[in-house]
Length: 137
Image (cartoon, rainbow, N blue to C red; front, side):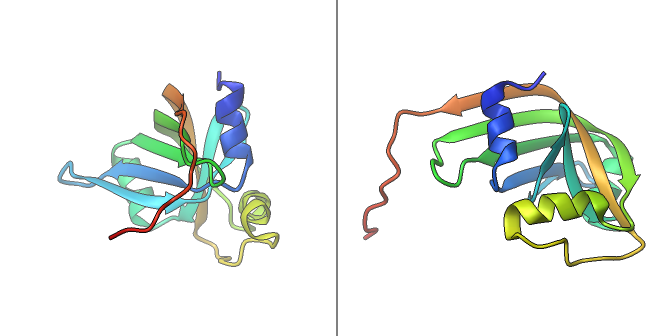
């Protein structure tokens, strides 16, 4: 069961980073849009993408999602891809895209899928900092 604070992060237009495992076991990470379906996390991709290939071979993944307005609020998740669901008409990704861009998902095609991720370990962190970047030297 996802904590309400974690749900709130996924409900907003906050970017997540998805880590999967390459064929040689090396991790790879990519920024992604995310949606929720109950307690499952949804990530859209092409059926032949590295995300899809990696999770077909090894379903273990890790995600981090950070609040755009307060980057000291974040969730760290480990889980498994339990399904690669076809989304050829982008019905699932249209809802997710509207959250991020106010428009339907632009990359349509017969090979579109959604990775359905079941969280197994979830940590929520809210650090007591104020986000006011200074000048870098």
